[in-house]
Image (cartoon, rainbow, N blue to C red; front, side, top):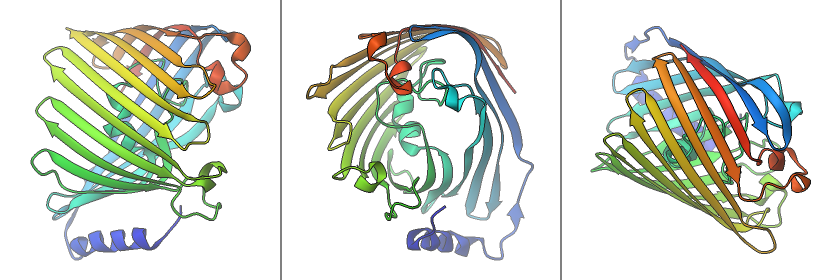
Length: 326
């Protein structure tokens, strides 16, 4: 992991509050989840696989005014179409979040990005077609996971909060800050609205110029109904300029959830526009066992054009699965 002046200053600032304080270190929580499914896909043979298996530890250590929330998680996954990623076990989460109610907080490590937690998660609510490593077949350009993350955040003030993040996944490209993101959040009762703007250095993708992306997201919960929306605006990016719009909704009836989503990518240039419909029914048999059925339909499902693993993942598919958690 890269070490720079910002990181050292941040750690020094928070360490001041922890000097000579009595530490509280309760035992961590052990957790895990396994998702198995049968899948029929336009661009692949029928498969029965483990889409995702994760196991981890998480907990909190307190020192007076500072709470350190830590997570360490391993993941096993079988890729939807790219066999080279099958049977890989990775450290998916290894991070520490420092929180002070007065001064805000900081996040250091590898794992789920803040853009997914605060923005993409509002529409990424499906079991099979999502931003996980197994499929990663939604229309967005953003990713769910990132390595070498450093983020700072203000405390919440009248529903508002502000965050800044730096991600440096490539350690030897002569650039310290590969991705920089600035974010403003507002939440009140069952409503939330978030805007994020990011800058990606040209060294990250061997591009001719730096790239930029703006993402806006909102969500609302009303009794059993949930609705979330995301708009992603990509410009000056290596793969081309485009706008992506997504809407997801969910209705919960007792132990059954009915979810429906629509996404559309409008390209500027010679590339064809894309669209995606996803429908899902998930029924919880108890707190630790759920079954589901899911179908996804792409507007242009043409096998002859699926020349890469990323494009092969974007084909019509039907899935039946179960999820066991502990």
